[in-house]
Image (cartoon, rainbow, N blue to C red):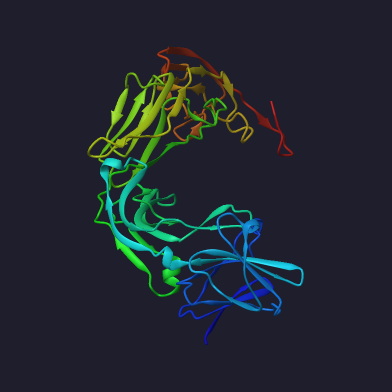
Length: 428
């Protein structure tokens, strides 16, 4: 006689008369059961509770719970009832409770698995299942029903987003099912794939596992990831608005990027002045593009995508970009080559200046410096040498993001410093 022990805590139940190993499942403590044992069949099986005395009393119960248990024998062992049943062994004033499942009453039968587009949506795929994989239930000592999971494995191929490469990569999808009804729901297909159902864990424990595979399902669900990256400017004379959001001082260049799953056929970036996107300022079909915002105001940008049938629309988060009004302040003095690092360059202070032209002249009208970039300053040199101290003149024409035009002219005083004979501190 071959014994198949299944240990539970400090005690063990031995099953004889079986030709396959017993599968033991540990239930929650609240059930009052020490273990749940699954046997290929209970027919002709004898149970022996380790440590039980010859006077131990055995009782069996069903869905009503332990309060309605019926005595079935005494001693160290007893024959299993046919089918599922709970058992109580009472010995030396203690009770030991467990449940035995007869798998022959719940045999898995996997027939077919077919994708149903009519019952599917953009989030979940509906798979029509034929076969038998209903729930296996057991009852605790209070008669409460609990499902014993078959741990059926539903697997498929899918796409996961990889942040480091900002792209979608192929990966394996997997879900564990307690059982299966005539319709199984799985994540929608992000790439061409088939769905496979295999198991259950009891048949696999007995090397009898089954598997079925659906016909190939074309990718139809749409997913996407987006990001917006503003091109930084580090000009120390540009006025910052103190915001951590997108935008600020014009011209503001932002790179917009999108990564999409396989089914995304129609793609579009939309730029609008309206948060509801009632009208569009511009739109782009490319996944990646750069855009320069030059006009004052608030802009809203989003990404949309859809599949070939236009049945699974995707809409990204909305990026809000604020471009501030313009400002231009002009200094009237500086001191080049006198105190390095302090006031040694003439620079305007500006914000949202989109067109700029500056000319600097000496008193005889000779042009010494010109620039079309407000971030660029004059170091007080002409021809590689510092010009003498004195009064110079500037003419500036500029335009702001808010349409404001600047026509500025005035004088620049170059202050002359003389260094003391001992060294380092300049004196006027």
